[in-house]
Image 1 (cartoon, rainbow, N blue to C red):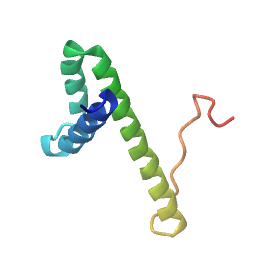
Image 2 (image 1 turned 90 degrees about the horizontal axis):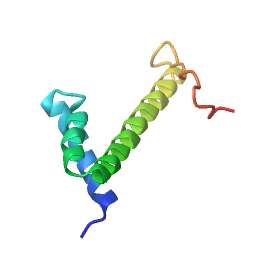
Image 3 (image 1 turned 135 degrees about the horizontal axis):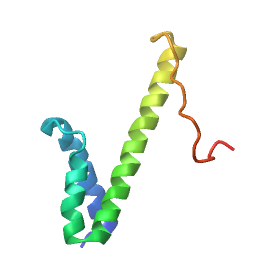
Image 4 (image 1 turned 120 degrees about the vertical axis):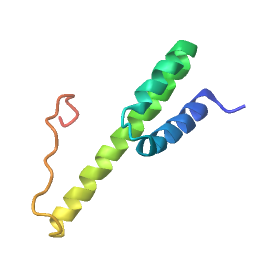
Length: 89
């Protein structure tokens, strides 16, 4: 049997991939509500997997825009968000 995290990771991948087809970029939240009713433990593992994937998307988008600006493909480099978590110190 697959581990809790493996199952949550797979569901997160599947849900995020389906969002475009469904036309709902918050569909993952609806799935989370269904999971909460069934298993709060699984719901938390799923939401962690979703958050990690969404953060990776944002980071990759930032990287791609920064490189495009450096290469002259776009006019302006992106600005990093304000550091609210103290990670930059």
